Amino acid sequence: MAYTIKDGCISCDSCRPQCPRGAIKPQAKWEGYWIDPTLCNNCQDVEVARCVQSCDIGSLSPLVPKKGRRKSTLLPAAIADIFLSGKTTPFASSMVIWEACNVLAQRQHLPWQTDVDGKLCYRRPVHRGRGEIRFRLAKNPEQDYSVAMAEHEATETIANFDIRATCLHLIFAAYAITINSPWEESFVINDQHIEQYLDLDKRKDLNKLDKLTLIKDLVYQSCQLLVALDWPRQGKVKAFSFDEQPIWHLANTEYYFEKDVQGGRHLIGLSFTIRSGIWAKHFLNKQDYRNQTAFYQYGTLPKSLLTEVMSNWQQHEGEVRLLLWLLFKLRLGGTIG
Image 1 (cartoon, rainbow, N blue to C red):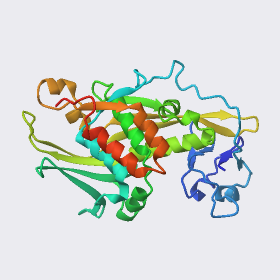
Image 2 (image 1 turned 180 degrees about the horizontal axis):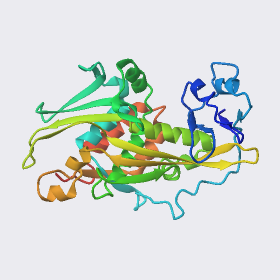
Image 3 (image 1 turned 45 degrees about the vertical axis):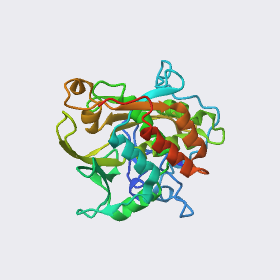
C-alpha cells in the first residue's frame, strides 16, 4: 500500500531524505511534496514507514485504493490507434531496433562483458564484423540517461527486466514511423493507449494503481537501453557512427491525480513524452533515403504478437522469444534500404 501527503504539509523536508526509493518529490502544482505511488512500497522492511516516523505533524497517511474513479482525460478526443486496420501497423525494424528487442527478451542470457570503463556492455558485430552495435544501460532514463550503470547494478537490472517491455519497445517503433523526423520530434503516449494495445483494460485482477505501476515500469525499462554504433559503407550509403545515445529519449513523465475528500491524491493517469534516438536519422530517414545517403527500414507489426507476449510471457517464455525473433527475421511487410 502506498502513502499520500495530505493538505497541511509545511514543506519541512524531513520525510524526503528518509525515503529509500526516492518516491517523495517536490511539486510546483501544490504546496509541499507529493508521493509517487508507483515507487512507494510502504517500507516493507520496517514496521512503520520511514516517512511516517519522520513527520511531526501527521500529514502522511495510507493511500487506500478507491473504487469507481473516473478515467483520466488525457486526450479529450478519441484515443489514437496505430493499428488503423485493427490487425497490423508499420514499425521501424532496423538492426538497432531488432537487437534492442533481443536485449529486452534475452536479458542475462546474452554474452554481456565488462568494457574498458568498467560498465556492463553487450557487443553485436554487424556485416561480418565490419561494424558493431554496443548496448549499455542508463542509470536513470529520465534524469541521467547519458550515465551508464555500474556493472553490479546493471547485472541486477538486466536479470530483473520484464520481457513484456519488448511490447513497449515495438509500440514506440510503430509511433516513430508516423513522424517525418523522429530524431527531432517527440510523440506522447498515455496509459489509456498502452492499456488498449496490451489488453490491460481487460485485466480485472489489477486495480488502477497496479496497472499504472506496471505500465511505468515497462516504459522505463524500454527507455534504459543506450546504443553506440559503427556502421560500414553499404551500397551508396557511406560509413557512419555515433556515440552512446538512448534508443528512446524519455523527455517527460506526466502524472494525473484525483483528490478525494480526505485530501489524498490518487494517481489516475500517466503520459510519456518520447523521442527516438539518433539511430532514426540513419535508419528511418525518408528524405535522405531518397538521396541515397540513409536508410528507411520498416516492417509490419501484428497486434496479435503483442497479445501473445502479454498472454504467454510467464509460462512460455521460449515461445515468446521465438515470436519476437521471427518478427524481424521474416521481415513481415518488407523493408526499404
